[in-house]
Image (cartoon, rainbow, N blue to C red; front, top):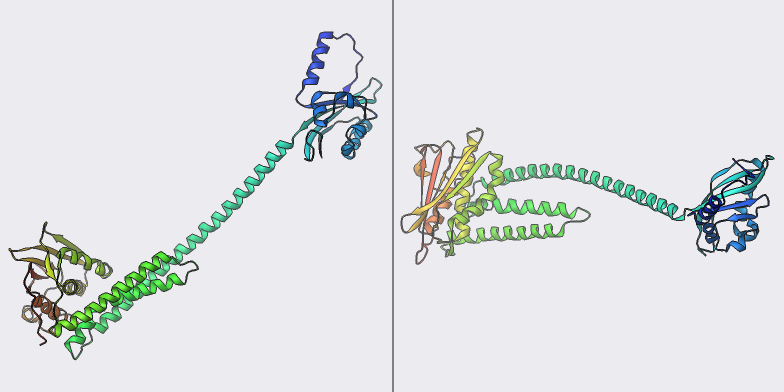
Length: 425
């Protein structure tokens, strides 16, 4: 509460300095009387109102800013009636400085009390806080937007977590299904057939059919998603086509093999053929805890062979080695595959395992049809291998328990004018 003093002893220079500061203050200042007329006003408040000092001093608020009377007069009258200040009083409205735009002003209003104890004047300080309010609103909006984004992102991460869990469970289920399917196909492959050709085809088609089945199941799962990955689906279909072609090649070439058909020749590296077969058996090898170690001598020359048929030989020998290790019921084992030079005219491939080996009395008959050392075996795998290698001018042999398990070795010539043909008997 301020009191009006009649002190006339002030230094005139000090009064001038105070008057100068009053006029140049960066906030709006004014003094109004009991009739709400401007007694004093500084330049800042004149600018806010958009009027000159002459247009305001001596004129009432009702005359100067009639559009704000409803907000201002009751407040001024309260100060006069109660003698109490009104602090942080917010007024909203347009001004001549900013026509057509609502501005926000924050005012503090203090009563000036006469010596008689009545409110003689009201002293007002006004600040334009429009930009501050806008900044605060912008900050709140930004914070709200950020909170919404964080909420959405949190929900997305939670959803992804659930999807990852579901995908992991699905992968386990698929692996189990693959295992069951492979067991079924292995059982079918061991069913005896009345004809060599039918038995051979069943034996050789296990891998491509399993690959086709697995890829087809994966494609179906992709299509069941709301947004299937078309690129991945395309890759799966390419694999299915490739495996289907491979199965067709097996059938066609096995027919040719037993019908004196010509053998297709290509110049290939044997280590590359082996590298193409090993990944196909990775899952089966891992399931039996079997490690396949492939070593190849450097700078080996290529051989001219039918790649599909030679890969059938490699696959049969590797599958036999894995099955042999599994028969022991131990903690797994190792298969060693070594590719080296066989003199000046051929390449040698040796496949050794940690299995139980072949009984001495049976070792001379292992390459004959329908002779097998495996429980439930069909006895066609090694017979097919020998027929294929004979057709290529190669050889195959076996050693047991040297130094352990079993070791198959086969050779292929580097080049020959014309490949032999396999007899039907």
